[in-house]
Length: 169
Image 1 (cartoon, rainbow, N blue to C red):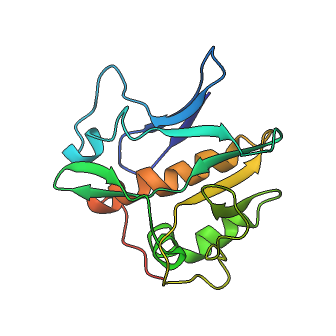
Image 2: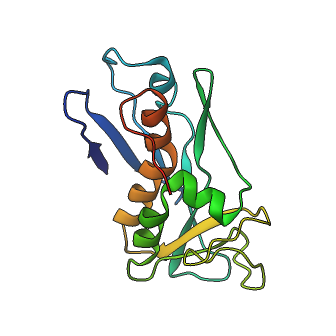
Image 3: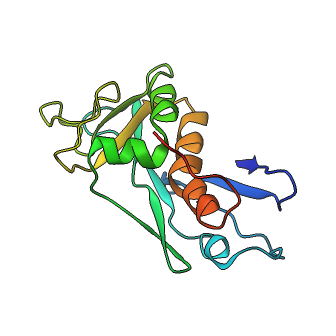
């Protein structure tokens, strides 16, 4: 399945939702056969920094993706794995993160799915303890992981190259 990201006056970007024969699934910014002229940091994101879509621990009806936002080191996109919830909200956009977790069946938790790990409340994002966040969503929901992928991996690079304005919380 392919999802198109369009910015006025910029080349089309395509996110592929890959579903493999072995049951695995991931999202990636697809690299077309002919890559248009784009900044190096964005070109370096093509076919890299995939986001795996996995079954949630101890739940066969819920899926999850890790909420690891990208940042750019020179011209190479990289990811941050452990952030406070306030840092994650600042990278993602607080209102956008709130809107995302307000979708039916969507929740932000610790990566291990443990409810006893504090710090993932988007209405009161904590800024003291770094944790690995994960976004949980219903198995039949194809849009939520793509929205999250775009915000976590593509948007930070687009901001870095000047194709989108920076966000303030």
